[in-house]
Image 1: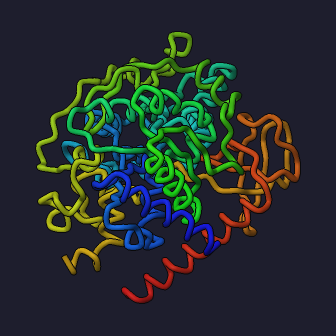
Image 2: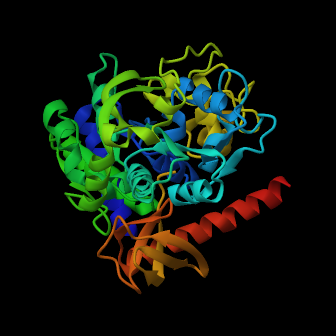
Length: 360
Length: 80
């Protein structure tokens, strides 16, 4: 293992020397962000190598208008909200699901399957599944929507906030002021979409894309591979997570997404509107679409809290550069979503980065 | 949120499975991974198996999860 670390570090040093300026590598996945902080890896990287946390935490990139729509639904007596635990603390315009009174109609579920079961068990209520997440959770939503159709369940709805990773990466490297030299690509999203999905980022934008798993060793080797490419002046597509990720990914899951969803323009916190970056239920399944059933607004909401999560998500600033960080925004009383989610960059900085900040 | 947990399929009926990781058992479905069979190690994400995984990878992840759990408990004790 030591030899593998040594080789990766050597590649990092060589890349820093070859480029002669700071190298910025964006880790796209929130689970990578947490693993990087938790392992203390940042302090072992060469000075010229900087890691930027990207828009890889589904809770963090969810636009405030979506949260407001969820809160609006929670006020209805005839609705039961089924949500993954991460979402209940995200603040909207006024409050979060957690602070909503009465909160009797909010249920935390571990899977979309539990949400559908909730609908079966409560025929008098309309169950709305808060369907957030990237390509990892979208097929799970698709499975239960299809099943609801097959079983003729009429009180189950999905509020799709599902987003696609590659269009967001494309939007980031299309921004004029971006400073991303390469991407460390998400492991489990790639298990679904396959590492081949990142080919366009490599080919059109000349950025190395390397998929890695979540163990610190995987991340170090992923960064080493990126640096090897940078030192050689190349941009290539690669996966070091060979135990799980294939080039084509999980084609059954992809087919499930394609059956139920179609790409639509999506609103991302910080990135704004990105073309064909979200998943909308197809017309064949429109009766399960919560947006249509409850006539919910999809217009982006204006965030006036002074929160700079958007800039954090684009890799433009680090969390401590936000005036609210650690002052009015803490994990106990979060203002922005990057502080809410345990996978958010601000929460990771707060939890693991304090000592280091104290020295600065 | 995008972290999947390796687990072994210990019961399987159609696409409904019971999986086991480090002695914890829970229900999951194999709809997205029809090739998965009884006894296979799979990655479970939000209640669905998304990929097969080998023994070495599963053990590495379980070990990491154990370390994180120990670390969090130590942290709780220290901060009090």
